[in-house]
View 1 (tube, rainbow, N blue to C red):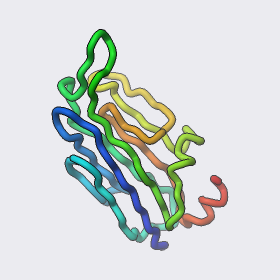
View 2: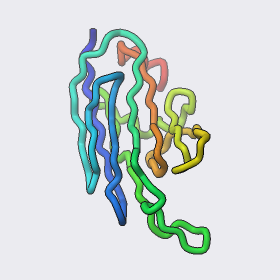
View 3: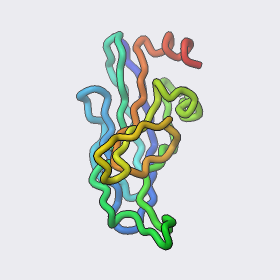
View 4: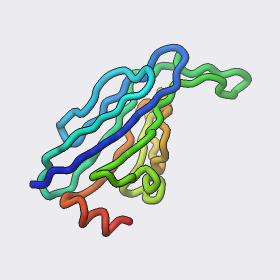
Length: 145
């Protein structure tokens, strides 16, 4: 077992209803609620030496949380990943580099089919950003940087 410090700062932009987000690693929920401004999650987690998934899920966004004019979005409800650190190492910059390990699956707010994209720093549709990593963390880090 290894203790890993995880620090995530999430921000939001919204106009109608604040976005709802759940952050978890496996079955351990680190945060579940509305994000009206900025939320920082700073946890020390005891993790078994195995594969793990950190998930950030945007949920309950409705068609009323996006305003369009002439087919263009003029106001929207979004979650922004402002910081993502593990063991005080900034990993936000590498999220978009590997679509197999870091991805965002969403339903385009109503579609029956899930779409999978490389994870960047914004969630705009109901869905889950997944960050796959392995413990021991430092070995994973060396293999993936």
